[in-house]
Length: 120
Image (cartoon, rainbow, N blue to C red; front, side):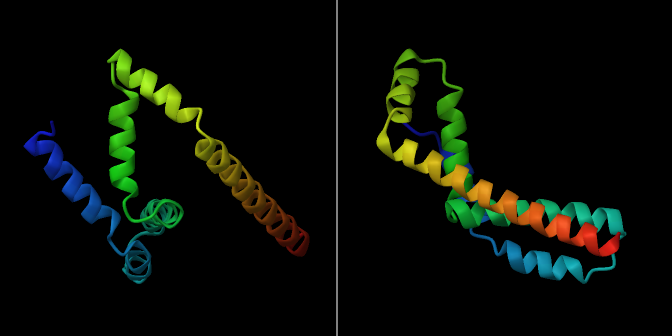
């Protein structure tokens, strides 16, 4: 059912998802890198750390499995996908992510407006 290479990919994805990304951000911050490169790396590692915090350490495995499922050309797989997306848990999860992203956006907007008021 699962090929040997697919199992190795899942293994490395789980190891990558379990890596200490926040510690990597702290270490990277104190390296002597040019500003634009360090900002790029910090944002990339921060995004991965955020995805891990929201989805758990197996987020890479979930991403690979969901992409292989969504890109499937089999009709049965697409029917299974439609049935899964109509479930109650998906509806609750979507509402949760909408609520969290709205709260984060409001906080960031409020902080940005206050910072602009201070500097203007």
